[in-house]
Image 1 (cartoon, rainbow, N blue to C red):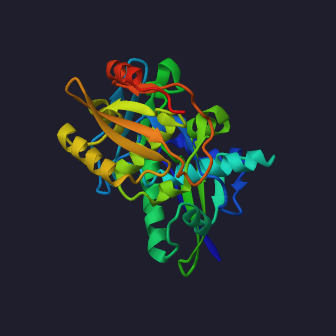
Image 2 (cartoon, rainbow, N blue to C red):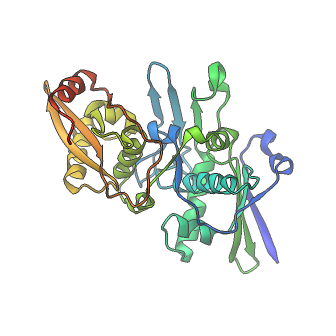
Image 3 (cartoon, rainbow, N blue to C red):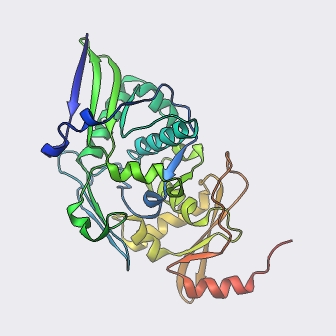
Amino acid sequence: MLRDDDHRPAQPTEANERSHLNPFVVATGDATPRDQRDLMERPFFSLAKTRRTKPILYKTADVEVQVLGMPEHGMATIWDADVLIWAASQIVAAENNGLTTSRFFRFTPYHLLRAIGRPTGNRQYVLLKAALARLQSTVIATTIRNGPHWRRRQFSWTNAWGVLTTNAGRVEGMKIVLPEWSYSGVVDRSLVLTIDPAYFRLTAGLERRLYRVARKHAGHQRYGWLFEIAHLHVKSGSLARVSDFALDVRRITARQPLPGYRLQIERNDGRELLRIRPENSSTVPVDKDVKTIGTSGARTAAKSLAAKRKPRA
């Protein structure tokens, strides 16, 4: 006999949410990996493998993001976000095939783990449940797609999750309910980008963050995208000091681990910059080609550098 172990947030408005949603049953894990543009561009996740409770408070001229991790579980990590990438991938693949989707997922953890490049042993099932607990307990408030009342529209990465187990404790299936904010950011195709499956093999949190930034900003642009290191530090949500962050970026640049992109340290007017360029080693085609050169926090330097570079034949 199967036992249904539910995990729901404290808000009473969510208690009967699933009764109003038709389940989206995922029968296989095969789908081209896709990620949400908003999550790739801004700092929504902890980059550390240790528990983080210090909030992320990110603000620009027109965007604000606040992420709070609860002491019991800590903030959702960039590895936990693989679950959201998998969910987005399944939604897009299903709708491409004319199928109806929903925020309410039913699936087997085996298929999810295989799709995101994880082993399928018992320890991974335990880690997956811990990831779902962090995703549910992390609280996000943002101006992105929430308008002027964004502080009253807080959400978690999952509204609820549950595990179907046998009396012996063997996991037979899982279910999650995504928040409307995440679901609407996937069904709108302009807000989703394909990513390289090799992304799941990146082991360092900063490597993963740099890839997501690269995919969002650099795309297929010939000269890539230029970031000032100090600006990139803010954009990453890292807890490291700027000097330590810069050292980590230099080490990653020396290793060149990002699939489909090359990293290059540049200096201009006493500022340290990171240029991210596309290359041909990506294992899958990358859509949403962007044609113009771009910068983040390095506009003046980029103009002078771009002016010196002539297009290659």
